[in-house]
Length: 550
Ligand code: ACM
Image (cartoon, rainbow, N blue to C red; front, side):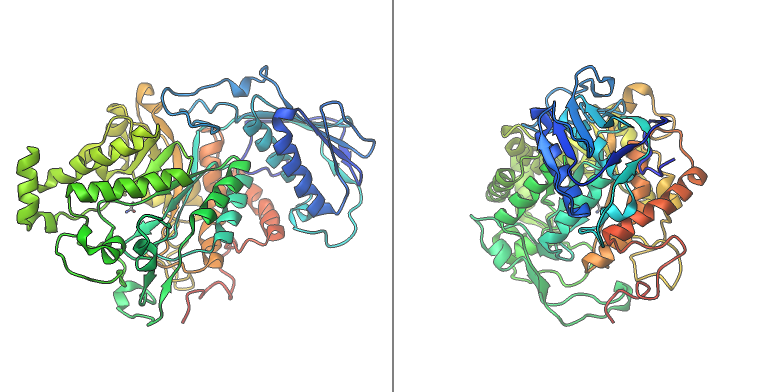
């Protein structure tokens, strides 16, 4: 049935089809006119038709797609959690679904009607409508004249299982052009994903323009050379790499994403993974030494010092970040922060004594609490990787469990102590791992997450009590980019695993790989039309097999 991905809650076949053709109209309530306009633009590009936009009463003999907001639609009962609403943004809730993201779509001889309790739901209904059209209509322009298009007669009722349906991209290890971020928003929202987490800074590069600290991008955005091949081989390419986004670039991505109901969650990783910043401003470090942006993969021991002046620096960065990103969630990383330099530092010992801390291992918790104040002052919620739960997690902080060995137990501990949780466990959701343990695959950090393995994710840890389960806001897939240097390669690593992931966070718990696999195979025709460099289910094409530069 229609091979929809992700699978809706229910699909019922109706007898009669809708027909759309040149001169059709998209009619809408004023509240969802933005969604109507987007859909009309997309259909115009795909078909070459002239499509009118009209108010709720508009219709056309050439076909009508009617978009409507109705509070009667049950899928949209607001499930907003206290204290996390951001202006104009929907709020990820618990597993019962999310305010306004559900919809009902009916196509029949009267045309197509999409009803949601809020514009977000109407938007997702239009994504389903696009999948009901022939795959060729996912092209940017029609290969020839487009005749009337039949839409099969169905009633689709749908609501997401989770509110946080995320895609993460590391733009620090390799810089990706702004246009790829826009493309990723298109592809993610097409699969009904709603969060784009940008990992903007790391030891190997700083990508976010900070006006008060220009050296962060003048110095921190560039590295002299990069590893080539697997890091174990110890080879370097001898070529400079870098780039950064201006604040205007990122504001553009945020606006583009908002129109597609995607929240862009920015991450500035601190107090570890900060070598690029310390290369730009050595006074942030512990040694006073001048060094360069890291040219190897792995974790630098050069972490931030814990002076008040460093907290002020980080607050300045976060305030500019919050000027650019309206997201209710601000990610401060907090993963993999070695304490060796603090342990060796007289000054760190003195700071611990002044602050009444038992020792250097308590410094990260102290630091996190301080930067959390900056984020809380602007009414935003903090997001941190799982390590912060041990270092000391501020109340209200969202925890992202990721390590293979600990993610499930961390999720339980975090939920039990009142933190919302976004699942990102490596063995299912680290899409920088190869698809198969096969030398035909491009070089990757390690094997292997097949599409079937990605599909087998169950975001709620087994046996979790109901009162904790509501704290699981959703999940996100990660693409770390030590081994991924181009948009084409990134698409390969994401797709079709992202299609499988989308179903784990959108669709109901009752699903099966044998039912999904043929549906996915049919869905790939849409990715073909969209020009996505996905990995075929049978394995890489000869051209994809060695995408890493020689
Ligand atoms: C991580 O993979 N260091 C979050």
